[in-house]
Image (cartoon, rainbow, N blue to C red; front, side, top):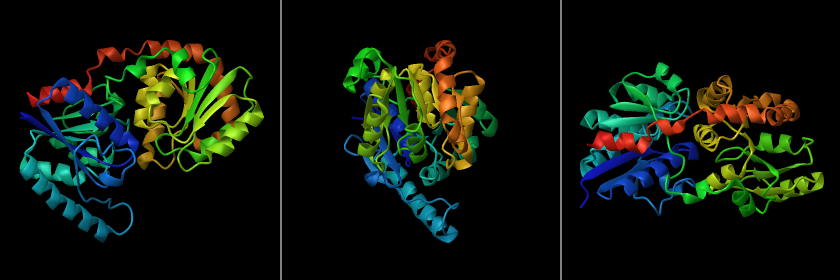
Length: 354
């Protein structure tokens, strides 16, 4: 018999869904009497949501910032009534909102029903929905302390999970991780990827770079890209490469990497920090409010990563040369970031349930 019930308000990209699912696994491992229900828009068709692992309910939603405002308001209103009904049926003690307009109807219903909720904000620049609902939250759990400047109500910096703490593969030696990708266990390894949705601009620019001969790459190009053509391009350049559209076990990819070229989504930033991997971050210019640019800027200011705007990808080769040359300095700075002293998000949620 479940004694505690937690409703997760989720949806959207892997950046929202991966930490939510990692948190759900950690909570279930911590207390078998916790029942977790995911709710949000389009979860049944979302490739980043493991629908066979977690119970879920579809909730209608929409953003008023794209398309017809009238249709958006209809979608939000419908989602609000669905959320009120769901809260009445499930009776959660706590709602955890992970941002995006998929969480809007559920958080609005939480306010109406006076159900306590916690917000999770992984970006340096908080999203519109989290900014709107922060004043009524029990707490806003942040990855970047600077995000508190844009939020109301209490907040705390926590370690937001991007994988379950129980994944033992995440702690494999780098040499073993490289072997799992069919690469030389002792060669300098560069991880290249554009987040859960890939990045055409990075893919096109990276294969034109004249790399030193002592490097090999793991290139996760995205599901909509021609991985065979990219494999041939790397083969022609003489650089050993493992090219895949997508990698479910990103913890292995980060363990294998000595360096990375990547986007600056919240999950990617967390992975780079946890794995202590020096990275050249190319923020996705299409991110709402350019929040990826703010994430990368925060890390660069602390000497933990370098940032290159997508419009400046013509300078990718020189930026990579600087990354390789400064690798030891960046690694030393990353080693000084003691994330073990930061409370885990799962511990914070457990405290709110007591």
